[in-house]
Length: 592
Image (cartoon, rainbow, N blue to C red; front, side, top):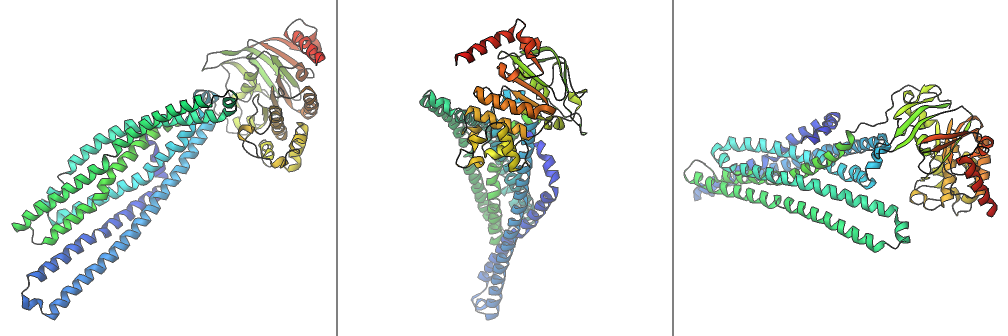
């Protein structure tokens, strides 16, 4: 139960519903206990009538008295049963609804934590596993805070009230009746421990299946292109068989609870009949109705006792799930907002001897990088794949914090700025353009949710994608497939550019975002961008000279270090990477 303590804050939050549910449960149990008493009273009356002489039985007054008593008892049984049923309905409405509120809060808390965790976290964890935790694991926890808590409260209160009633009628017979309970407690303890172990293993395999499926669906085009469907189908079958094996192993243990509970209740009934019968024979119990009352009490405990197995199973599964959730919820985000006050961003960026090493691979991406980009200037960064270009952009948007050195924005250390104001002032077009499964218009409006249709079209025109969009049947209302699969690579990049433009940020970061477009389209986009970026700080990462040549300054990054910097005219006249790349791309252009 240690892991489930994390949920106590939610019970405190919804304490009114929780306490009201307990109160209703107590009242409902009291009303449900009228039935055994009334049945005992009715049987006692029948027994008294049976002991009357033939002459007394023939008396109309006595006949009427006993009939009236039986009818009165029956009406009371019906009335108290209806009230108990209605109160049980209210109990479920109160406690189960409370559990849905807790499920809602917990899912939101997990989602917020996912949003706050750093890039390194997502490199180390698979998407399918993360999805499984926020869906399957939270659902298991909901079963604990809802049905499990409700039935536990119901069972404890019913036991307390029933045992008190039984003891009041016959302490000795009560003792005989509860004799099997220690055996029940031991059986529950042993089975619960085994369920906890097997439930944890099953949840882990469920995450593996989710992760594998998500990965296959995301890469389905590659799988089909390489005709690997059968191979992955066999892999899925193997994984599903392992998961099924763990599920059946868990089910076998869980299935022992029902028969065990019912057997123990049956034993209790036999104990009541046997010892109650002996006590009736020797005169300790005066009425046969008392034995019937005890049998009803024992059967009233049948469902609560039988539910102990189900509840115990739910608690063990919930603890295993909450443990998996706690692993993430207790992680401290690496990137924190250290300034809660508003930060106004103009856009000047300064790197001072900045170095960064990726923790997961221990690769030093950049070393001792220094440069300044003033507001309104455009900086281009060129270099080979893996040189560290994208890392520089990630550090500017604080997806990572520097390992060494310092980054200043408008003269202030970047970590001391309000994180959300910083990111809101940045428009970034990533190397791998990600689009959502939504309309093209909404994908562009992602940069500015309240943008008008006119602004959306203007941004699309600037990104030279408007003509492509109006060629679709539904134009801007065209719904894209997952990750924008409906569009070509170049179209996805241009929609992503439009999304950054419409935001109208102080800083624009372009990470090799024109690699999938032709030279003519690239030229048109760049001309539009240079007009848009006149009053903005712009950094362009590219492999093409054409994307960099009009920048105010160009940096050449090799092995994480700046090896050359200057304007286009300066660099083509220097021996080095830029000049050789310029000549190579120039000759390729002439050959086309």
